[in-house]
Amino acid sequence: MSAVGGTRLGQPGTQVNLLPGAPALPESLTGRSWIVADAGSGEVLAAHNAHWRLPPASTMKMLFADTVLPTLPKDQVHKVTEEEMSDVGQGSSLVGVKEDYEYSVHDLWLGVFLRSGNDAVHVLSAMNGGIEKTVKDMQAHAEELQALDTHVVSPDGYDAPEQVSSAYDLTLIARSGLQKQDFKEYCGTVSAQFPGSQEAGKARDSFEIQNTNRLMTGAGGLAPYKGIAGGEERQHHDGRLHLHRRGPARRQDAAGHGDEPELRRPELRLRGDRRPPRLGLRGGGQGEAGG
Image (cartoon, rainbow, N blue to C red):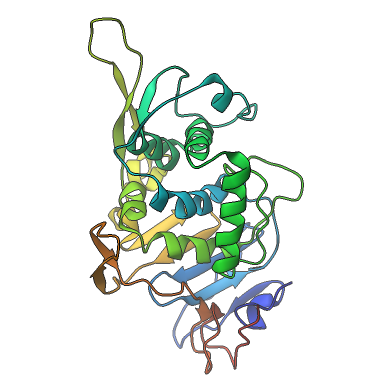
């Protein structure tokens, strides 16, 4: 496995440096690969097979959003074509985008973040210049972030040969996304109205969509956990990574898009490393930056 982030994170199995008095990790954890990290500082509190290259499924949408979100104005309106919908994979998660109807970029991002809609991803990819260009853009951004375990084949994460990522890379990508105000707001949206059908002479219908994160919605009998909203405290993605945010400094970005966190390279490291690597384990010895 890769040694980006230090040699400890490149080792198989669980890597953790427990502080005095901290309880041992549960023995019943079943995830094949995971990281618990502080989204603000990049400290890794614990990790398990952090660099295993596995099919990312819909967690790849984090990289899609982090790459494409800054490029399209939220109020831009687009009429969906049959061609844009033709290559959505069978059995995909969908929000309900229909061809020959118009949607704003904002509507489509709600479909991506709340319902993991592959249909919305494909339309936004078309608006970004097409699937091929979007995949290239995503791969370039992954390399810029030093997410070197990641190989992008489809922008929506639909299973494809050789499409892989790792818990380490997904953590880098999530931290980068959480530095963007729009990304955080979409993550923190519990429910929204999504455009539906329209009859001639009548106002367009809409229907409610809910976030698939049950810790936000309380679905399935779970008590909602307020700390998840917007990634301001905690953000969770498909059991693969868990981030804690402490609130970075704020600034006005160069494009004038509003109050943004101070952008820093989204490095991760194990807390306690004497020489901090890009993303490293807490409490370990001297890390190796790698990559």
